[in-house]
Length: 346
Image (tube, rainbow, N blue to C red):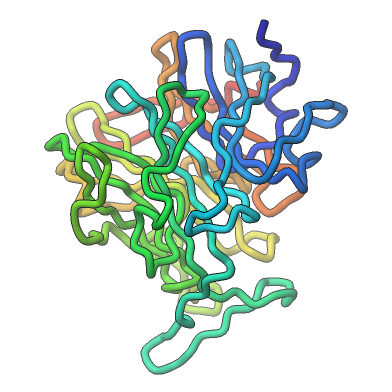
């Protein structure tokens, strides 16, 4: 019998993704066995797995969770380091199989330094504790017959995102013509002004063409409206793209970024949305206002077993305590609107 003894705000969770399954819901999170105590609720005694990878937590109702299972382990011998934990795992039902999209890293494989025209840009963390340099990072796809895995990489030799990009947070979507795409964020560390981009895929989920630019982080309204100052300078961050078809046919895309003006050194992490009124994945995209503030973001949309639309995201970015939240959402022809927090209750 599956146990679910933990309230949602007890489960450490960064970049949450929830999939509805027959007996409830699965919440996917990443793990690093060397930091196992940071991935499980305080006081719990779940046995540490080996290596790095992805866990699935089970819940019957979105409120209480437990029974974590390893669904993917970063393999030895692939292009990415098995010592670097994945980011942003998500699982999609795809035909009669399930597809895991997650971001892997190869810190041992540096990319060329960031350049702004003829100038090399050396990036230093906010506290001055380390230098940020481009490394090979990309989203991979892995498949399984069950949402609980085990998932196996489609291509262990390379990511599905371009190999010379620092790319992250890839998500699967079909466009208005039914063509599959992998939408991802191009890391600000490499381009300074982070972008959302997409690569077309075949039905077998092989890359079928060159990447396409969708929009830039600097197009967010809090940057376009700000008075020119140091607060208006790069970096501009793109995280967590999640397309969603609106009533009437327009396409929304959830995404997250930082906006200046907060007492947090890095800025305030926020969840926002962009809209393609034409319904085309290729845009043009119009930027909307913040959906959820307060250092919260990297959201995804879920239709519950009761047919209700909810937004799942995390709060506490860049703090020791990052936890998932569930918000009720209304989808209108012109965009998404958050109407209240469901879990944990306000």
